[in-house]
Image (cartoon, rainbow, N blue to C red; front, side, top):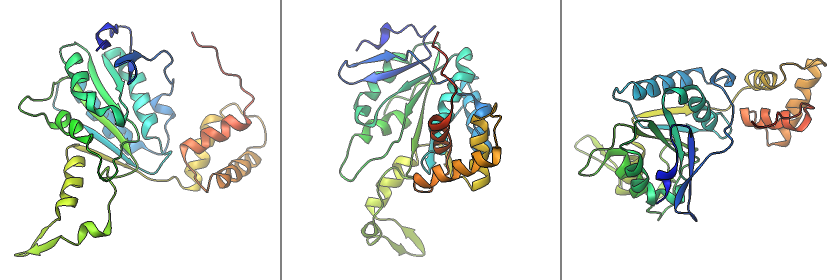
Length: 263
């Protein structure tokens, strides 16, 4: 693999490219900052604490950010990188379908001085998929302990990362007063259980959604009440989703602010 060609002293993030069988340096980072993320103060504080422990060489947990779509899970990871890259934090994004390469990727960075977060976005597995086995190995190690400079941060809409069916419960039962889960349920729980930090994300209410809208329109000089009405109508066209993602999409649809050229 060619990921060792990346100059991690000056490269903050990379993507695994399956067709190249290598990591590619990220050329344009999302500039989002932690103070721009509203309505997720508890989740933000807990992930910051865990990440700072990681950077300080203290024990830290792999993290699973799960919950409603568009609620800031991925944005929080990007903002963390922008905040802590000067302290040596680096991000490697690996798609679910490429998790089989995870042990090799971890091996390639385990001796480097930087601290690496392996980022798995929108992670979930369908019945019958087995590529999560490599993820299990990296999360807790095999006969070799995981490296101290690597953590896994994953986002998902599912708490247990796998679909849950009613029939999975039929083989569960109570034995001598203790609940014993069916094998299918145990398999689902055992994967998410390997993440020591669970952070849950919930849909925004109307006030939180409008605050997110206002965070994008800081220099807006028009009728703010009318802007809010338009933002709510826009949310209705998105199936009633009042999320940070919807607020940003509304801004993209009506803002006259030109994007700044990249350096």
